[in-house]
Image (tube, rainbow, N blue to C red; front, side, top):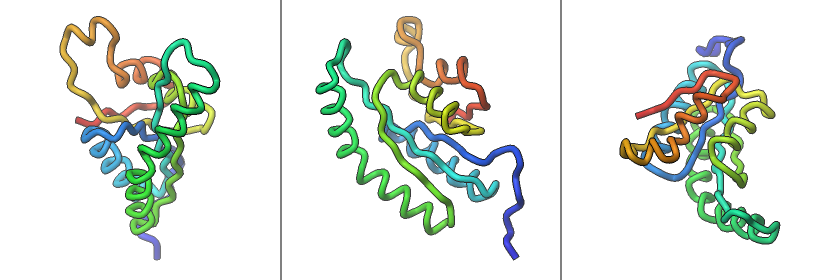
Length: 146
């Protein structure tokens, strides 16, 4: 008998991934939740090309980012497989907060999990953090992991 319960509320969790320690903690929490709730995980990294960028520059940045994140994605997928969790990965280009919110909407994600980066008060006043922007605009709950 499967110990996991059917969960009508959370079917897919999107995890914003940038390779940082904070992102690793977010992955840990998302995998734990996915195992408990019997749902899938979408691990997404966002490459930020120079602005304005030509199509060639965007493609080159995506190729570089895919190569950069491949080893980390492979580790997460293998770990998830051992936990019997389905994980998909992707690298997309653009502004991180906008792209994560958009991807969560288009993929019908029920929860977004992000790591929190410690930024100074001055930096937050200038640009705001990705997690704050995602929380402000997301259509679904957002869990920010410290």
